[in-house]
Length: 301
Image (cartoon, rainbow, N blue to C red):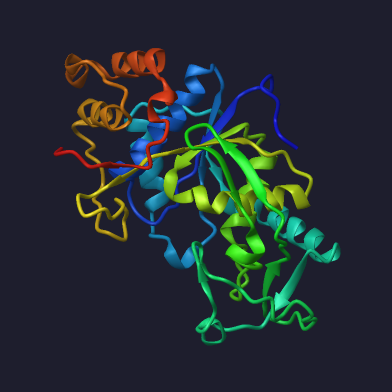
């Protein structure tokens, strides 16, 4: 069910604690924050700490402290996704009970010869009749009916999941709930009305919309902002060696984020008091300036 235009606005920023906040993540935080504040809505900070093997010690605390130093103001307490494990598992169990999810015994080796589509290896569905649930992953049943949604920046977007990705993982073999399931459960619990995040997650959204439909959840509005890339086209990320944002040159860094978001901030804003920077940004925020943009090359800092 799609949220109506009159629903109260609730947005969120949901970083994973795999390292300190880098510039690409800051740009996403700024965009989601300004979208919420410009609509006089609530903005939540959610730490997505459900993948311990990838997390760095103290990264969550560092991210929260950096957000505070940069003047972000979120509604309520910081939310930790790991605290919602029971709700994630309850959703999984409901899918299993309704025969919408099934155990999968396939290994990486089994998947090696799979067809490859735009979303990676396409699962063949070979375990659809599998009933041995002991220590196995779980996949969600898909079909070839178009799953579509309207993105505020990129317009109509759709996928036929069965032929483009196949049945996808909702519970990993190591017992961890997969991101696509956890994120839609949390968004539903927290009443998120719009998700503002990077373009790199656009292709994952139909899977999340599919899960929302199966669980009879609301589908938020989506806005996938352009990702920040190096000149060679690779995305700024911890994996690609992106460093932490400055804890000293805060207003200059926010100013740079606004420029990368095509908001055309006046030059004097780069040296203005932090409160003035946020005041200007909220008053002048226009997400429509990003329409059609998939990526922005990192300018010299």
